[in-house]
Image 1 (tube, helix red, strand yellow):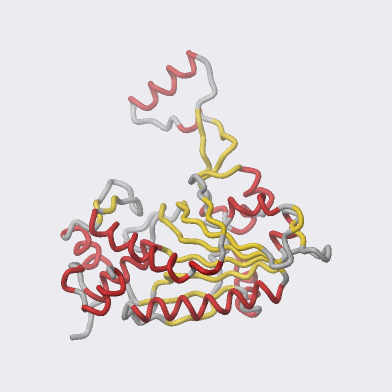
Image 2: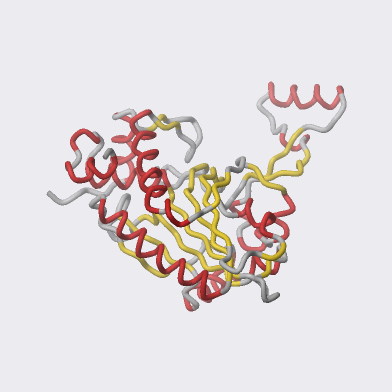
Length: 303
């Protein structure tokens, strides 16, 4: 029987089966125990595949130094996605004004000021400052599981304001980095196909802001700097990106003075599995009850 692709029907199914827990904010919902179990076992599959790669394992909080966003010129391209952390810096009288505005249902955010941190908008961003200096001849490889924030409120369940990404970052020469990216593109497809997901790859671009962003997106596509792995979740005609591969060339190497042993600016690339999106793709493909999934899929996730 052909699958029906409908945002509300899929969302209602996730909710009615206790897989996600609605909140009053679009794109911000709780995750139930079964949802988390699937997500964690998929992440474990990624770890198993990468076990012999020798990646350094890091953990970062969901906030980063505001200066990182400024140094990488994030606000030039993605001001619409940014989440800045603000707090109260005033005196007692000003504090009373904040409380009174809140009680009256008025805008009290105007009485706050920006802090030194922002919510992390890209899983790879926290690690680049730690690469400053000269990397080994073999380069460096780091893996992380980071929470990411992007201001994209939406009723579509795959478009979340806060979500987790299993990230890998490769640093080295252009040849090292591109070879690694291409290898992982095939790995990612093979992994998703092993779970009987109808995944395919395609050239992609980031959601740059404004008219100038259209030119940036076109250039990114022409140079094939970004690939995505796509699976139908919400739409068959417009499948959902569950994994992305980005070749940054020397952008972060120049910004954070990262060099190879020959003194040249290092290149970087990253890949990230959107863990919630992969999990939703599995529910879409195989149904809301994992106990009813194909035996071959269950054997892969729960060996």
